[in-house]
Image 1: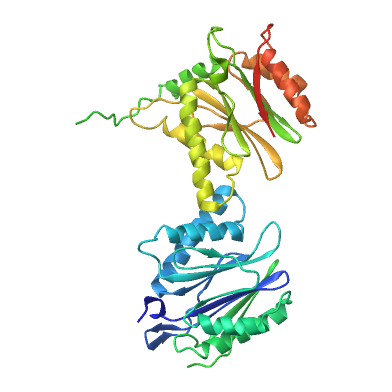
Image 2: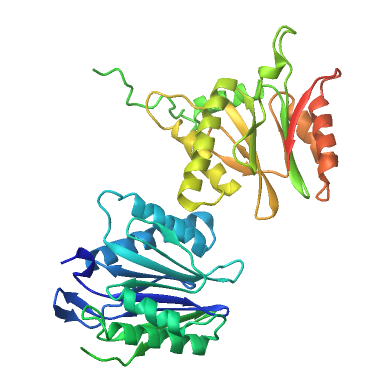
Length: 205
Length: 209
């Protein structure tokens, strides 16, 4: 039994044309038993910056709370919105501080840069190694399945509606091939000035 | 083993003043003149490097110092106190970079350095710093010029003079300053301001972006 698959979960973020999608499943399990079906793993840090976390549930809550704390103080002190790239550095630092006793999480960041209005996605491993690809990021117990779905479905410069379809299908079909994830899904589409949140009708098993 | 003071040496006078800070400001006013001028596309800071004797090796004196690529600092007052603050400022800047992978904005640095200076007015066994700092920086595509006082207060200036003759210097700047000043003119004006009150010639260090 791996600590990272104790609670189960999956998270995905994709880049589109001036928009991003970030989605997660809703399962909260304790090993084999599903205990909750409304455990969202995506947390808004501010209007244009969303954080997704998979792994151990208590660490998911702790890390998202700690980051929210940091970001709020940053925005008050510096009188400006944090950019997603800087947020990635904060996250990376926070995780590496615990290098020899880490948080058991794998984070995913999706955001729109407040100055340049460019979409931004990134992910880290549990000790903070950052990765900023141009297409999509996936984490969770069904990461392999998610990679497969994304490689097949993703194409560059998708409009928000198309991106929503792509992201939803990738997530739904990947979690259906994993016992640890599923039981519903939530998708956020983030554009400049607008965020659309939708819950997906999924297989509840 | 009570070698450490746990009470502050900076205490209030009946009139509500912190006399130690007043005296620190006196130390600043007795120090060598320094000048800062914000131009439309940059900032100039300059200081007088006149030594008491020709035997001093002028090249070893560094008054204008760099904190980051975009931020520089100058002072009036006690040199050794300046060195301590300079080291702290550089560390603050690097700690910020380590965490955010971004150069520290000038105002953030100024706030943190001022916090350090304030700590020394309210801690046990220490005295306030005997320097006023002029911190200049360029970020957000605009120039910044700040003064940090021994009390921990900080002010944003368009142009200012510190140290000996600062009143004459400021009066001179009030007449000569304009918002459309270009960098070259600002350098020229800075040198002239330093010369106010000094009929003779001397070398000047300056530092601008």
